[in-house]
Image (tube, rainbow, N blue to C red; front, side, top):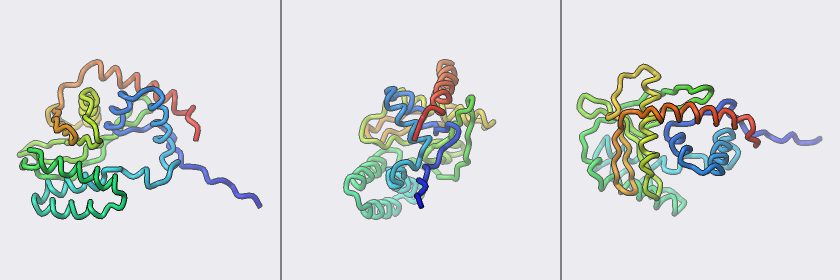
Length: 219
């Protein structure tokens, strides 16, 4: 009796987070296709590689924002438990960069975020800030750039524009300045700016391109 091969789960329609869409824009064409393949077949590679690389570091940052110094102690202890040395060192770099930054001293109150998504054609864009927090009476939507290289300034601006657009499509009353991106490699800080007409045009062109490529991507 022959064994029927197990097929990888397929995402039937294209969907990307606001962060990943901004990264996609700045990729070469060949990298874009590999990236879309991984989005369409998210379990086509070993599951360990599909888990967010910096998830524990970001969780540690949230703990620092909530509890201050005790959060730093606990977060470092948890990161020391990461078995893979490279991942452990990179995660520690991310946490230590945040702790050393002025943002660790801000009086922000971390709150639960809602899940939002919006569509352009058949492309679903998901809202994915790393932290949602109250800054006094105003909500802040905070993204982190965790990678070991300086964040591309256009990628940063697009991330914030896409996040703003998703919330506006959901009827949320927000202003561009409520969106922030902190580069944990260079220390650069980006605050949201009004959405450019060119970005709106780009969104439609991206959706058209991605939905055209999606059916052609094979396992």
